[in-house]
Structure formats: C-alpha cells, structure tokens
Image (cartoon, rainbow, N blue to C red):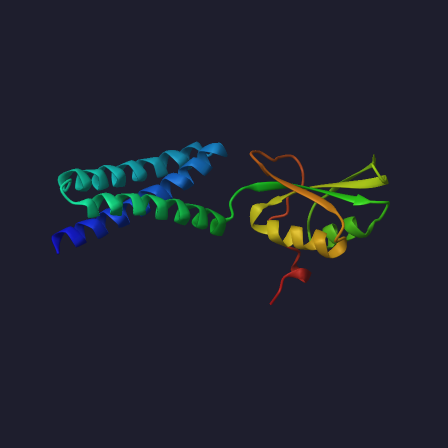
Length: 178
C-alpha cells in the first residue's frame, strides 16, 4: 500500500511540475521574465521533492512508471492550461482574391484593428489584411474570416511584441453574446 501512495504522490508531483514548466517555457519565450522566474521557482521545488521520492523508492518499478506518466500528463496539462489562459498576441494574415471591402467591414464591426494592402497573386488582384489580436480572440477571428470568405487564405503566427497600434482586447459591446 505504501508503494501505491508513493507512486500516486510522484505522479501528482510530476504532473504539477511539468505543467508549470510548460507554462514557464511559454512565458520565457514571450519575454515575460518575472513570470517565468516565479514559475521556475515553484517548478524546481516540486521537482526536487518528486525526484527525492523516486530515489528513496528505487526498488519499485511503480514509482518509476508514475514518474514517467506524471511527466507525460504534465505536458498535456501544461499545454491545456496555457490554451485556456489564452495569453499572448497573434498576427493573422488574410488574403482575399479580388477587391472587396466585406472583410474590412466585418473585421472592424467585430472590433478588430486591421491594415489592408493591395497586391497581385497568381490569379489576379488580392487584398491582404493584417490583424494583430489577443490570442483569446483567435478562434473568433478565424471563424469570422471563414464566414466572410470561405476561400480566403489565412495564416496565423504568435507575436512576441506588439505596440503602438490598435489591439482590441474584447469585442465591441454590440457583438458580445449574452
């Protein structure tokens, strides 16, 4: 019974420290040093405690399996938590064939700032729309582009820094669903 509880403890500790480590890595990549450092402190404390439990019970394969399963679960949980938090900013590029104001009208009505450029593609004239938006509005933005022009070419990238322009944090009051 002692091996079971130790294995469960190790699993839980690893799931926690790897989840925190995943978040720490993401915040470090975004240049959020204070958040990354704080998460790193908790991550390392939990890790040291977990690894000490593993080394104290090296005679049991269950503790080693729990360690590995906790690691895998922690990766999954960390990514899930980060998606739920939705921190950060994205750059969405929308390329529409032909000349049309529909996309710009729809983007502005939904509270997105957008910059439009005209260009030429393989099949003629195109409009380029550049939108920098909070990641938590990413799905809304992609669905909007699909609804307005199902044939639009859309790309999305994470942005490490955005400043000096318009980045809408929330949709306009008229479009907020009740």
